[in-house]
Length: 459
Image 1 (cartoon, rainbow, N blue to C red):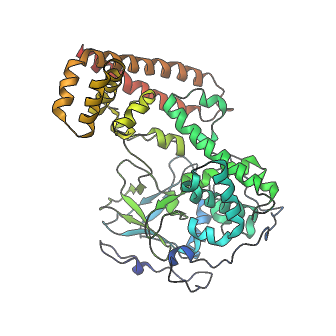
Image 2 (cartoon, rainbow, N blue to C red):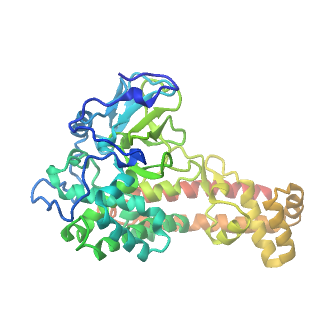
């Protein structure tokens, strides 16, 4: 039974009897190595001719209820009143609590037996995976931090090949076939994105290409057949599944994990749940505070102050974002020199209000072009929070900073209008991501229009 209240030990949520017996785990990193599968032999399982998930059929129904039954058989537990919910006829599924939850309550428990864990995957595939990972790093220097995502993709492809013989088949068959993020966009879609959104979306796409290239390089040595590796639709689907459903944890060790059922929670700028992983590798979804009956269970999937990264990675536009990045990509060197971050440089979506550090960046750019000594002094003032010196320069150069900001804002507004018109000219059947692209551009345009009004009131 699920017990409510903060401070309850995770051990209180022991799984029901699993279809598989528990094996002994070593003392070192037991949560990562708790797996009952021996190290995978190369091509141990040939792809099934029948029973594969049809990833090419974007209209194929998602069998989420069978997945829930499968997960329950393996020990997944939900708090009383937590149910599957879809408001769009089955395209997107979420979790909803009918009876409410109390702060600290574990609302979903997913046993390690069915959790996809990048550390366990690393041990499962052994040397064959190491060769592929070496190829990833060779193709993209500094890509080590992305290897946990690569492992998840490999595992998904491996289980996909086994068809209905895979223990994960019910989960794979419950997943969406179509995605709307940067990896899935057509080349035409990229031409309709503002620079910041285009940069983020293309970065995700580039990462996918690097992973695919690494698999092709070692296709004769890895655990996945060459036929599957050369199937672009399948590999892209597997990458998107990993990219949009993982949760990153840092304790007890850094890993990317996917917990079936727990991966149904959607994003909110004010989430009511969080995911933790215990030392045995079990995934726990816990209520952050009392949740009223009838509420959706939500997580934070990213920075709530900036919706564009969520748009690029997940393919949706949050409806509850209060701010957006000011889109000053051309001032990235100045941003870094001042020690600022994109999350500091925001416009309010409801009012157009400008964050103070946006003014700093534009002023610093002006000073660099006209008075290097003053620019150096201003940079030091920003780095040391010397508000007196900052205000002195801000007052002296205000007309120039105001004019520079106006030019930027009106330029983005013009770009968004043209890009939106271009996107709307495309056939939505050939470019199904157009609606979310248009929504993103319109959010930017509407916010910048309010910002322009404020700037005009200043002079």
